[in-house]
Length: 172
Image: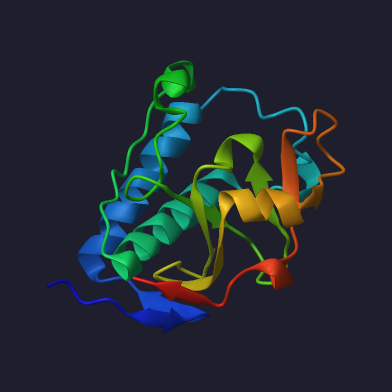
């Protein structure tokens, strides 16, 4: 019978060398696939991290969540023109969406399409992103209900969840 554990968050997950190498490879491939593609209209370029670091840090967070939850990480990357084929594909397992934050206190973005997912929030630890801190989690439905409008998205399809609304325990 599988073991079930309740894990208190935050928790730091250290990647093995091969995990880190794979996550870095995925991050680089994602950056290369997006090369030349326009950013979303609401991105504030003055606040953006360079694409290479952002892509690697996000992949590290996904890998760390997969490791913590003992679930499959597809580690996929594709050209933006193919995104529609993968729009409903979860980052980890079948329902986990990983949200990377650049600072542990930042609010967490949630999309209207995340309502049927489970969101786990992570922070890649600088300077080299070999570890990630898993900060909290929330069901997509609850996250949408407790979220606030994102001042940068007038469409209303993206909102933000204050960090204090996240659950600090996860069952794995």
